[in-house]
Length: 551
Image 1: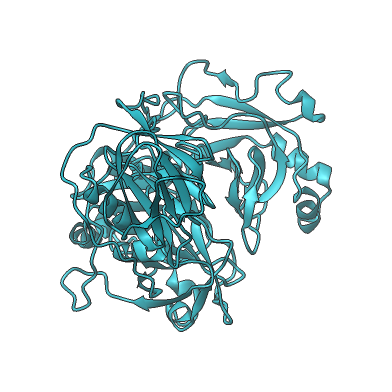
Image 2 (image 1 turned 45 degrees about the vertical axis):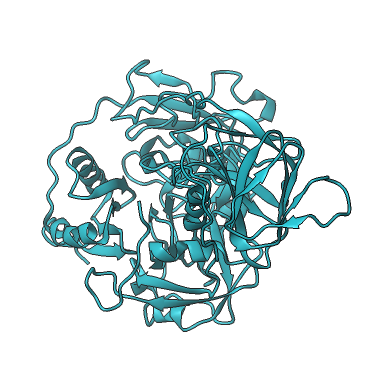
């Protein structure tokens, strides 16, 4: 199969708000990325490069539909990159996959270590997680294609040095992942407080240096040290502001019991996909906005997102509201007593006086509850958002007993809101971008009733079913961009539906993408819930109209 020319590049739909462009190689993808970053298309909100693709995201389905006619004929201009830096990374080759991978490649463990450490790697693009940089061998490839695991691990330790496909990379923090783990490093690959948070930029030269005892890592030379040129960053590093001090605030609530999980979430942080930072934000964005509407806040103010119930005690007069999953809500004048408390309807604001406790029980329908606080929950922002991102580790830590919740200055009108979650489990999807990897295309997904696995979280919903989705294509898919709603199919055939804390890139084919208007419903699917997918046409003006998220 010959590589497509710039006049005939394939362009795939990714839901209703994004397009994926297939390109012949990494160099072409980087050229497209540079050109579209410098001169965006109408309605373009973000562009990300990957191994042989670019993912372009738009503000509306109309803009995305128009771009489908522009991108096949798009021709990027020439771009010039500065001289590369050299970065040395000390590695203890103790990865749990090292021996098995060496055996599978027909070589000794020592030979694999020597091959990896003697190769000069080039930083190609960021993705998956903040600071996770895909590096490729400089010059001719020296390693064969490295297969990923058939099903990704739910937890990969921070500092893991890994291989997959033609790439080498380091996991900057504990996260899920399907790469082959060959070693560990203490080199920090991400620092959110830095003006350049990611250690590597496109074009940097990376050398992995083996060290034996773990205690010696970084002893001979500071790990991650730039060795040449000393002070010349490579490529257009994305400068971001250091974490800003939080706005004026005061403590209004104390956390007595955070339940299974209570997080601070707002509309998320957007525009940092090149650094591997997902959008994050409230999983059920509609419920979070409804909570803010009820207590007179701006719609993008931060709220508390809870699973499993919680209890909060007021420190001062505070107006709160609960939306999202259906759950028993009550106010207790004397916390800790056996008195049942006064029930409060969902979506109805209530004034808590000092010492009064608000309790939210476990959900009876749905999964996630949202507590809106008049004035908005205030915490120090990271990259412009107060959201907790569980994959990236950005934002405030999950709340624990005794933590204080701070709020800003009240404004706006207090009024009840409708707050019923949608839990029917019917999710509309746009086929692709990789439905051609499966016999019958998207029918392999839509013909099965799936069950939500207990291993699901804000990163993604893992699905189980009696008929796993079967590929009709061998080999690995080079890593490419993902969006919230991407339904990725690992080799075991059990789909994973990405939610708000999804990885920016992934290496398993995406058979379909849930429309933005159904992501809130997906976020309310509890373990054991049944899920069915329905394919729809994403083009504006079709008979099957798809409601979109409102900005």
